[in-house]
Image (cartoon, rainbow, N blue to C red):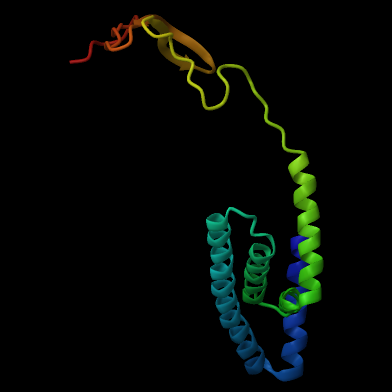
Length: 177
């Protein structure tokens, strides 16, 4: 619903500006906004990557420089969208007081979201660990076919570390040549 409202506002802004200054000038403004948006995306992307690299080298958090580059990229994307409502939002994002406000809101949202992250362990080995056999012991695995979530024609195969698993045929299976 929000996307439809934004589309309606963009089309309405195009029609209003087009009736004021003419179709040719409106198309020229749209093209200029697109080119300026591309330039801002390049500049903001380079600034953000430079901030990330510098922070990695100095082992610090690249907070203001990174969000500044990100906001520049967002402003560039907004400028590339045809219409003048998104262009006004892009110009607002380039103003320092608005950037400071948006940066504070982004930081508060990120801090709230970071406290809500939960790691859920659904059994098995801990994340990053392999539940292999103890050294010198063998482990078995089930070799079979799964149909609709159920194991069908299963055979337990014994695997000893350092050996190839035994190949078992299932009922109705043709031998492999």
